[in-house]
Image (cartoon, rainbow, N blue to C red):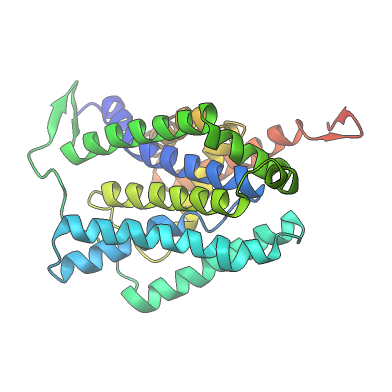
Length: 288
């Protein structure tokens, strides 16, 4: 087996998920200016719901639809019940609130599904494809293609359409946007529903390959945030950065060992935060 090729296949598979999560984070950020640290819980919730329903002999398409719907409902409820009534709070406080919601969701999932990893049947269960000395599952190919297409379409939708402009206007000045005829509440609701759909789609495609457990959400949030931060919270660039992050993580795991993966990824997060902080301006001057 060619380790280099196998690392590329693994990196593209995980990178496709990071791209979806990054775009979802950007969608929510563009309406609230709040980095939603509970975003990855949409992935964990969808994966858990689909797995439990599949084990209960519910047809897989119906189980997947229910899981994605649960992820969408979770993020919509987070905005409607938690964030929107507290929109006058400082952004830092709202970020901490989303972190609290993430830990609450983790506890609920642990009580509902236990601590053991869960999975469900693959959509494509045929023999894996051998290519350039590596092996890639057909489900992984489906994940890469669907994730890339979905992320690119939504990224274009946000950047080039009227709804994308409404998202930016809502984030920059909600009162002015409302005076211009933008339904601010509906725009935020659609943004969080789209973000939840992307998180649920990521789980529906990846969990058959990598089982999910109750604590998977925060790790997914952090990886999606790293990709989004490196992209400057731009939807199109977040897709590219998501795939690049997946490839980087796969090469670190392959050649440095699995134990090195998380520390290196978190170092990238710190470096990204420091790099992005230079773009923050105070009184017209760039912060060093």
